[in-house]
Length: 336
Image (cartoon, rainbow, N blue to C red; front, side, top):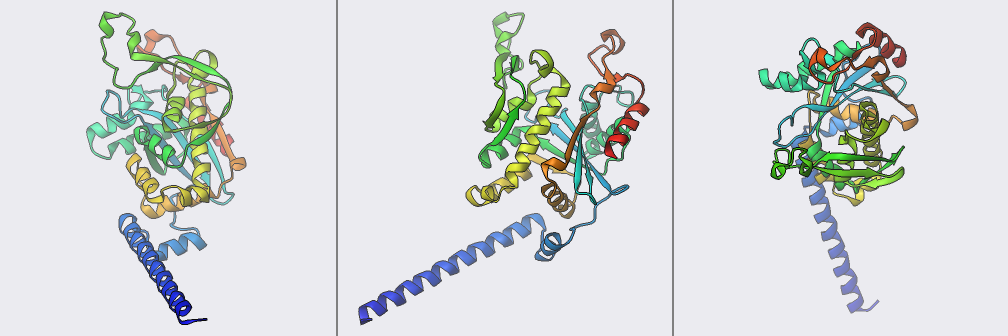
């Protein structure tokens, strides 16, 4: 090799070494920033990777997490929990049961619907929303709630967009003729007594669909569809399906390589709140990722509920057909 070729080879080697050093520095800085923001140390990461992670509260081998979804924003009712799901994780069998709790169940404790528990709790004191929501849901389904994880759906759509959208199988076509338009909640509509300008029609076709954040949000929020798809049961099922679709996307290594991992992490932090420590949260995340979809069971207590005459409570509500004890027995049977 001539002198010129040797110089080129040395120069190329130096460039490669510099680039590798810069890359290593960026990885180190990013890792330090991540550890500072989350408190996740290398030691904990190793324990999480090779062992079970942080110890979780549990009863009979199960950890129960109440998942709350609020619409967010500044409009009236922004902190009402339109989504209420209990995730019951069997730590030994690596299975999960998703229990839908309809938002319209009447609570004698609250003298209102259960979806107002978080609102009333927060009115009394900061952090009281989680405590009251736990207590009310425990009374309904008869199992202890160990943790709460809340999603603000106004930020939820950002997460879905950051992962490139989600694939959701729509089981039946439906049309919602009165989907509320954000920002027009108090529009006088020029004196129109029907306030038609506050709403727009919404339609979904049957089959597998790729949804961006805004589309997925309308899918889980729709409440006025015609037929069975307008029921709380169908709405709860849609919420479960969207969450499972997002779980599947977050499990894909491609998402974390091709998308923006730190942006996804920040969006998750901005759109969620929990009473779990970072170690408990990371451990639950690992358990969820290790639970395949065929080991996830979805149940609802809606068949055990009925709607009494409006005059009895002054609004549409759901109450047990028999008793809450019957609901407790049903849930216990399903968890076995």
